[in-house]
Image (tube, rainbow, N blue to C red; front, side, top):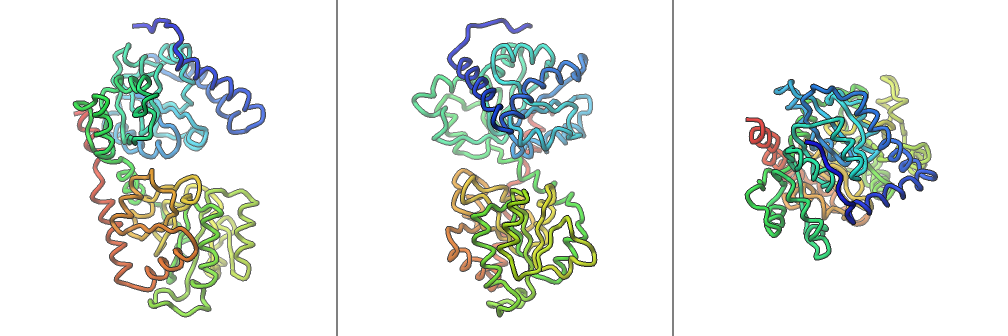
Length: 429
């Protein structure tokens, strides 16, 4: 069945205007330029790389975080159903640029913008047997194409909130796009209840978040880091993961004062001879130098310059490369996960899976696992330096309080795993 041409809707006109805006922005902005070029390049990739007789299953992730949620499904599909090929598309450069060479997929490319013409060309080159949408992004023209071609669509690890456009009076027309989804595997009951207000009941299942399966996989496959292990050996280590300057403004002064070798322990002998690992979200030279300037008087070492000979003498290790953080958390006694004073916190579960308490900033309302970890007593919200000092010192100075928080972190991750297995059995059994 071929997709017929249809009159342009207001939605398609908005997408077209957005495409024009990206083209203009690409003149001045590097990220927009990558997006514009990537979307055009996608058609050439599809034409050149798609095998005409291949049985493709299509996974779409907005960005890197959504990719990580979909990864357990893709890896299991690869293991148990090698007869299928995997097409992975991204909308954001931050996802595509990091995973464009991921060996778990047969083809990785940008998703061309959701115009009627682009959709017709897309389905001309690839005819997937099913589509998995990871968490967000319901592109109307693509989903209409799937519906007309009889391609089932599964929304995985999806989460819905009352403030989303689907549930606003002005968004009820666009909400009809959700009727094109075959089944929703949602993270929580609130999402199921919201979908029910739109008439979606029989095709909704609350299964939790595949992210928990992913972090358990990461923990199991965590690679050894001999230099970090040598740095941490015999010391109490505080790990600051994906930190931003507002986060660093809290934990660096704390480390220099309350958590320094010249300061007596606040209650636990484990606080002697402390170490700090910083994995900043931005690793540009200016940011790294700013961190180093804040730590004057301490022996600071960048990971790229670490050796077997010098790493044991360092007090602070700055991770100036990507891809190590998920393996580094296991060396920590306590962690901060950054972003909570601006863009929104990063992956809290990635640290909690190792059974360590986690500190986060206040911008966490839209992060389900963070809210649950807060309720469980495994995660702690900080608003200022006073909060940080009080909470960090209590956890590291009170063995009983620390043990309760650490056990809560372990238990929460274990209790919420299993979404991948349920979804896979539901669809492929």
